[in-house]
Image 1: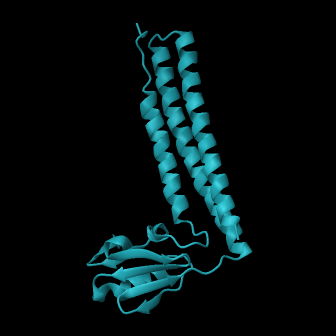
Image 2: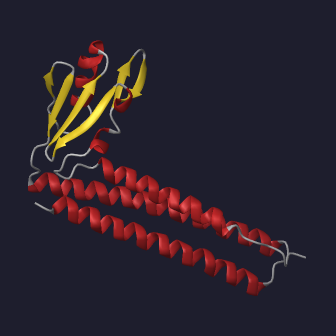
Image 3: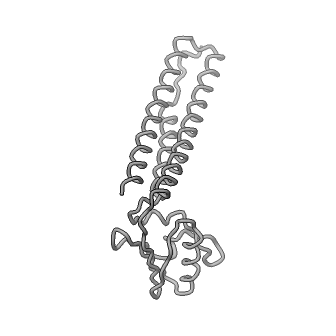
Amino acid sequence: MSDDFELDTDDLKRRMEGAMANLRTEFASLRTGRASASMLEPVMVDAYGAMTPINQVGTVNVPEPRMVTVNVWDKGLVGKVEKAIRESGLGINPQLNGTIIMLPIPELNEERRRELGKVAGQYAEHARVSIRNVRRDGMDQIKKAKADGMSEDDQKFWETEVQDLTDEMIKTVDAALETKQAEIMQV
């Protein structure tokens, strides 16, 4: 009856890769002592009565390895952008130069590097949990098909497929975490 059961492993893989993409975005926002335009992505500015991403109120540039600049398009928003950066928790002190806000990136001390390493670990754990949740969804689909008459051999085959996919994605998360922690600890 249920011999034609086909688990959509492409969908499971796509969802797991979505968790990886989210992890990469979170890692990009972690400051490693080098300037990066992506470190300002989480910063939202109260512009025109709505919370707006900083890259929609000005141009974000990296002119030097230890400097990020934000060229605010509307002079009236310069103060709000500066305030948003100050209150973002990035640990950067903005300096005004007309409509350009300069953000010198200070060297990270050892304690701050360790904290960032722990934050990276938390991000990776969230990604692992997301991947395991996708795995659980796949296993639930297999259990449902088993109840509908799938053979035990087919059940084992699909469970192995899902588990292999999960293991592969968890290894990718672990490798990304290791790389990011090495980058953070690099002086």
